[in-house]
Image (cartoon, rainbow over all chains, first blue to last red; front, side, top):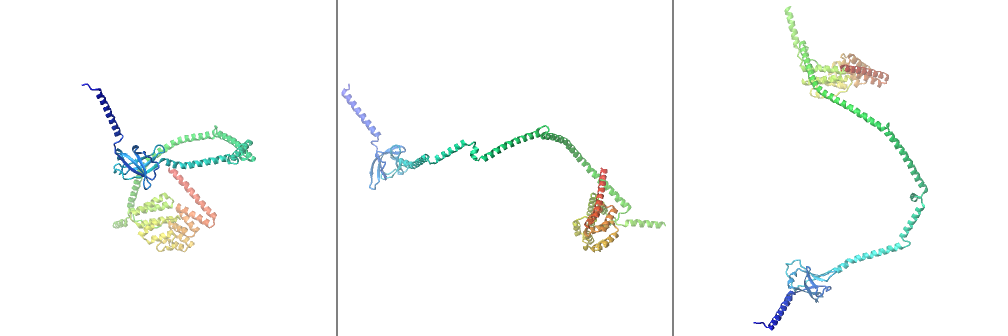
Length: 310
Length: 234
């Protein structure tokens, strides 16, 4: 069955309308049009820096916006922020809210949550927003620097004034320098300028001349000493000769010492004989003693001797 | 006659055997002490000391403290004769164990403690000299010395006088003569030296000089002779 042209057109229009409707719905879903939004109220002593539509940031991501500002009965500024449901988990009862006003860029409310496991923030609680103000801080820091710069500028001004003064120190110093250079040009030597006394300069020159003489004499003396020390009949060759002689004598003495060693060795050998000889003599004496005693016995004079003091 | 002869022989043999025989150590010690005396007086110092040592050993071997004391007293007496000092310590130790009064009296006499000497305990030959010395009577002392027969005893008495009493020329001279007569060099030199000192102290320097020269000459001659002897022995 052939499809009529009207039916085809009707189908095309219906499909297009359906696609458009679905696309719009998807867009609205994507933009969170159907999402529940939580509204929290923050308070601040001053409304300075707060604007509607200001972003609420958690860890650098936008999680909501400032929806409205109003003044409470106590004079506090109440800031209403709207946080979509998918971001409400970042807002906990332990969260802190900071109004951050950077030097460059737009101001924003920063949410800091240290403990994500703490209970969710009730919408009835009104936490206070603290303010971090980069601009004011910077100005506070720059102020002392500006003071110092002002002082430096003052000093520079004073200096230039002093330098420019005809009776100032620089002019005096330059005057002295000029005097010194003219003096130097007039005198014969640096010494003359330093001492500025003719007689003393003469004395110094005299002393230098004498020193020259002394050096010349010393040279002569050294030359003579050299000659006396090193010439063939000088002291050094003689000392050398003496040393050679001593060396020869020491060599001879070596022989003598060898001889003495030999003699002492011989003597110690001989001492052994001495001991034998000594025992021989003892034996001989004992034998004679025995003989005397026997003779005494024979002669019969072995009476008790009488010992008396002399 | 034959019986008489036999009897006489028996008596003679018995008399010979009758004496108590002296022990060997005693004989040996006695002999060494006599040798010591001679060597000491004649100035042979090297020979003298070993003899005294041997005598002492012999008496010690015989456990005879009295003879040991006598040996030491003999040594002291010889030193006194030569006008030398001596140490009485070894005798004092012996005296404590074997006290003999006469030994102590002799020791006092040699040390010049004349007032402490009991004349009855001292040998009789020193009796007159002791009296004279106790009275410091020099002429009497000279007489007493002349009467001492034993030359060594005379020399010892003279030594006591010269060491502990005022010097006397006659006593010195007598000591010199006695030493010279016996050839005792050591006391001779000592008394000659003492005499020269005595003369010089009395102001008789010339006499003193002469005595000194004499002593030096004697010493020189003695030493030369000694060296020649030594050279001959080599």
